[in-house]
Amino acid sequence: MKFKTAAVAAIVAALSLSACGGGRGTEPAPEGTETNAPAAGFAADATIGVALPWLGTQNWKEAEVMFKDQLTKAGFTPLVQAADNKVPQQQQQIESMIQNGAKAIVVGPVDGKQLGPVLENAKAEGILILGYDRLIENTAAIDGVVQFGAVRTGELQGNALLDGLAAEKGDGPYNIELFGGGPADPNAPLFFEGA
Image (tube, rainbow, N blue to C red):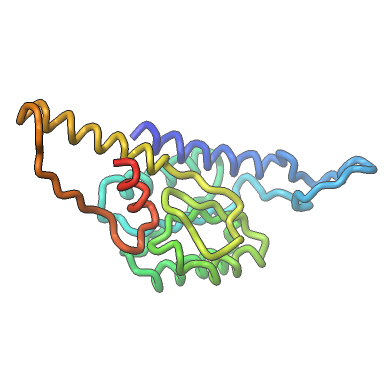
């Protein structure tokens, strides 16, 4: 829970810096300097889209609440939607965020391999794109990513499993069958690598 709170806070802080100008203000760069920064940031009351994969587990329910609360506290207008684990629905929601004037979109993808075209549409409109929690692949439209350390998480999960077995059953050997993560979740192999 603490990491998720910190991750949401980091995203909100990054958006706040963008809104305040943090290198993206309207003043021209000093003569003789080069910058790749956009000419202007966005207003503090800007609409920020958050595209979550679904609300079927506690972590995504908490993320929805945290994004709404933290973005509102930071002075932004949150537009948080969940896609019921359906890629076409998430693509449509992101398109809607573009049409509703979102200045930034935070994306926790249903399937990170299938969002490239819609995120490229958003990028073409000058929208800041941040990945959240799950890897987004097949596009260069991402401006930043906030993720958990999936390999380390898998390692911690594996150690917790072994510690629990040792406490309940004593010394091994143990018969363990590991499973988890959907085929569309690029984090799943990383959890297994750590475990």
